[in-house]
Image 1 (cartoon, protein in one colour):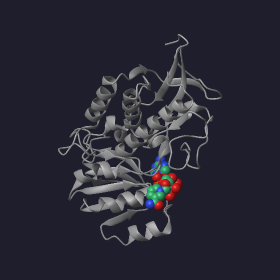
Image 2 (cartoon, protein in one colour):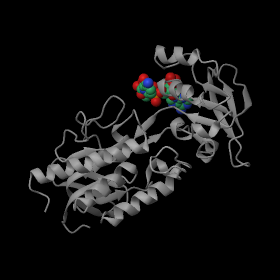
Image 3 (cartoon, rainbow, N blue to C red):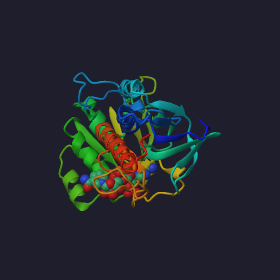
Image 4 (tube, rainbow, N blue to C red):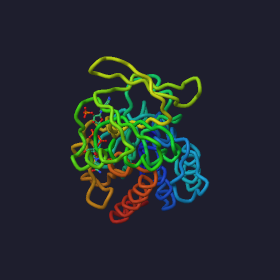
Length: 315
Ligand code: NAP
C-alpha cells in the first residue's frame, strides 16, 4: 500500500455510508479502497434487529446487514484495509492518509466515519447496550410494546424520542439531570401534555439492573437533591444525551457546524475541499438512519465519479 500508487477513490469508514459508497464506486470501475477503523461496521454492529431497512420484511440483524453490504462491495472489487487513520493531509490532491506506518494516496476521498451515540461512563450501561439499553428509539422502540420505558436527557432529542416511544410503551419516564429541560418550548409543551410521559427532574442514572438476566429489568436513579438512590422496574432505557461525530482524526482541517458535524454543500455530499465528500452520520445530525447513511454513500460515490470524469482522471 505504501507504493506511491494513487487511488481514485478512498473511503474512510465501513458503516452503511462507506460500504454503499464502495458498492457504487466499484461498480463504476473506480477500484475503491475502504479504510475500516477498529470499530469496523459502525453503529449497526451493536444493533440487534433492524426492521426498517427496506428489502428485509422479516428484519435482519445489524451485523448481518453490514456483512451483506460488505460482501456486495467486495464482489465488485472494493478492497479493504484495517486501521485507524493517524494523520491526514487534505491541503492538496492527491490527499495523503496515514494508518499505522502505511501511507495511502488518493484523488478523491469520501469521509463516512459516522457518529457515536453518547452514553454515560457507567459499566452496567455499557454492558446492556443492545439488551434493553439503546440510543435509537426509531430502531428499537418497537420491541417495548406495553413495557416500561425510560428516556435519559432533557433536549429536543429526548422529547422527540419520548413522544415517539409512547406509541409502544405503557409509560415513558424522562430522566433529566436538571430542574429545567433544555428542549425548545414547543417540544417541552408537547411532551408535558402527553399523558403517558412522566418526568424525573434532577435525577441521574446510577446503574442499569438486569445483568444476570441478560436483559434490562430495572434502573437505579439518584435524586440529586437528596442524594437518595431508588430502583425502578424498567424494560427499555433510551439515552438521548447527544451524539458525537467521529472527526477527531481530521485535526480540524474541515469545516464543521455548531454541533461539530462536517458541512457539505446544499443537496450534495461535496465539501468545500475539491474531491472530498462527507457521507452519513458524520455530516447528518438529523436523520441518523442506516438507510439515509447508505443513500449518502451512494450520492458521494456518484459525485466522486463525476468529479473524476470531468477532470479526465478516471484512468
Ligand atoms: P442536546 O440539545 O445537546 O441535549 C442533550 C441533553 O442531554 C441535555 O438535556 C443534557 O443536559 C443531557 N445530557 C448531556 N450529557 C449528559 C449526561 N452525561 N448525563 C445526563 N444527561 C446528559 O442534544 P439533542 O437533544 O440530541 O439535540 C441536538 C441538536 O439537535 C439540538 O440542537 C436540537 O435542538 C436538535 N434537535 C432538534 C429536533 C427537533 O427540533 N425536532 C429534534 C432532535 C434534535 P443539560 O440540559 O443539563 O445540558
